[in-house]
Every structure is written in structure tokens, then in C-alpha cells.
Length: 136
Length: 136
DNA sequence: AAAACTTTGCAACCTGATTGCATAAACTTT
DNA sequence: AAAGTTTATGCAATCAGGTTGCAAAGTTTT
Ligand SMILES: [Mn+2]
Ligand SMILES: [Mn+2]
Ligand SMILES: [Zn+2]
Ligand SMILES: [Zn+2]
Image: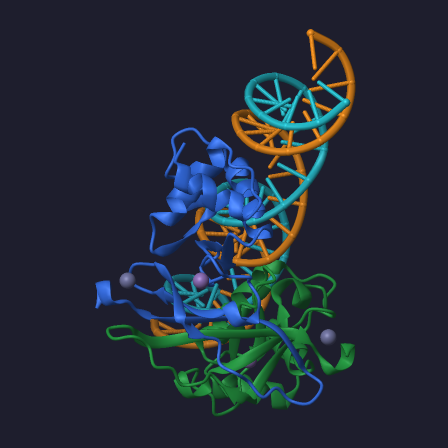
């Protein structure tokens, strides 16, 4: 029971159960975004659906955000502490086609767009694919 | 056997079977991008896997491109005649959260990006979500 | 400590995508 | 035109990721 993890969860109004702390710790130790299955594989005996619901709780409470990088599995990454998952917090994600890792490019906001008349902007998913520094 | 459809296929080196003509016609009658299942539903007695393989053939031969709009099903749309599915041909896609339709915004190219050092750009998927003129 | 609520584990299910294999159709060669 | 070869189609089966129902275990409230 890590006091620090504990607080991170409480700050987002998430009751810090053992399970949730474990999942949080897995996410916080990674620079890249992780899929449900990848998180599951970090454990021996934890059920997929429990992790699934944990991630749902995290996302509902803005502790994590998800990316659909087109690989067929949604990836999850921790939000910054001040993140409210609103337009300002949207950023580009980068999928390395060599190693398959998906990175949050938190320094790259989604660019402003002039949509044609009568199209409204609510949200966006911008995934750039290429080779990451590791695989270069 | 529409002579016009026939030619469109031949131009892309696709043998114009009856099946392929039908699928092509469905796609060409739509402004929006269609999923495999949506295409299947346009027919009475055509097998899903046949359409699946038809779409694969079309995509391999640059007749169509696909979009992963995050809805869980990949959408397909015809390419322009001069499209080579290269970087220049990439464009934004718009998913209406009300009606679920996905539109090719062919007039909106993927914006240029300054990726951090040692990240290379190969491809991108940029889906904007919001309300379309129809649902406004 | 009983009642009420929340979290977890397990099995089952769902949906879209994909494959193996046999048949049918189209094309080539003799 | 018949035989041989290649390609396309249909059907059933499988896969993968995601999601749900339900009962047991754990927590919190009364
Ligand atoms: Mn991110
Ligand atoms: Mn398009
Ligand atoms: Zn990489
Ligand atoms: Zn709409």
C-alpha cells in the first residue's frame, strides 16, 4: 500500500483498493500507453474483467485517458494531474510501427481546424504512425 | 454489368467480377464511408467473407481506403481517381456522434507536424468527432 | 453483528474480423 | 472442345478484444 499511489487515486475520488493500486502502478511505471491485455499480462492471477472495470473507473474519473491507435486494442495512459480530459488536454499519439508502442505526445496538441460550415468539433483522435527513436 | 464500373475496376487492375461490381456500386453511391457489415446489409444473399475479401482486394489495389473511426468497425470509402494512398492523399475523417456517419474530408489534408527528434512520420489517422450538418 | 453497498472472480456472451476448405467459375493450354 | 490451372465465392469455424450477469468476498454504515 503505497501512500503516494493511494493519494493519486483519492485525488480523483477513487477508492484505493489493492487492485486499483496495482493497476495504477503498472500504468505509472510505463512511458507508453498500455492495452487491457498488456496490463493483464503484468499480473499472474488477476481477472481481465476486473482490470477492465478498474480502467473504466479510472477513465470515468479522469485519471487515465484512452487511445484507439488502430491496432485493434485500445491503449490507456495516465493523465497529467491537472488534466480534465477536455479539448485543451487532447494531444497527438504516436504509434511505432516497428515496436508497436504507443506514446502520448503531450507536447503536441491537436491542431486547430477550420471545419466546413455546420460541422461542429467535439473531440478528436489523431494518431501518427512511424518509427520511434528506439527503433530508428 | 455496368461498363463504367467495369472500367473503374480495370483501371486499378481488378478483375471486374459481378460481386466486385456490386460492392463498388454500393460504395460509389454513398457519400459516407461504409463498414463491412453495412455493405453486407445492402445485399440479400452475399457472404460476409466474400465482401471482406473484395474490400481487401480493392484496398490492395488502391481503389478504396479505410478509416478506423473508433466505433469498432473499420469504414471504407472510394479513393479519388488520382489517389495513390500516399501522404498527399491523407485526409481528415469526420465522425458524426449523432448519426454515426463517417465522412471523408478530402479538402482537409492531415496537417504538417514537427515531430520530436528521431520520430519519423509514415502515416496518420486523424478522426474528428462532432455533429454533422444533417444532425445539427 | 446485521444490513447495505462495493469490488472482485468466473463463466458466458457479443461483435467484428479473419481463415480453412470445398465448390464453382474463369482462364489457359493442349 | 477437353483437360488442366488459376481465381473467386460460399459456408462454417475460429479468433480476439471487449463486455456482461451473477454470486462470492470484502467494506462501510446502521
Ligand atoms: Mn495520451
Ligand atoms: Mn477518406
Ligand atoms: Zn518503436
Ligand atoms: Zn450526423
